[in-house]
Length: 190
Image (cartoon, rainbow, N blue to C red; front, side):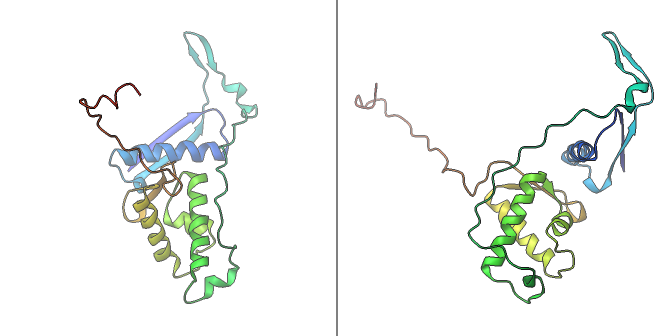
């Protein structure tokens, strides 16, 4: 079990989530399961003095934290299917439109959050009570991984799916490199 104790000035809960997520991801990349990493945040209670002067004064920590710029919001995903009503959750089978809307919703959450576990996705999408949700989300995650837009990290309950940034769904075809023929004078110059 890895315990990381971070002492600093006041942080908002969003800042703690972002910093903690990055720390957990860093340990996970080094082979330590994400489920065995604990990040503990605490207030710095001492004055820090460095060569350049006073860096942090403990009495000043009552001041409000500096505003953090919001993470840029990704452009809304094009929705080909209308938003399904809640009745699809209780049906034995979902139609293609409902499944497409669920997958687009999952992609939106992955883009805004950066990384999700299956459990977090179920909570955010309101699917915790649906017996079919874990298998459906696993299939969606597998499809997105095959498309190259997410990366799977960890295993079992520590599995997280990380958004890679550039959507393979909307990306242009990869560039092809063509070797120039040295003997053809028509190709030289151009």
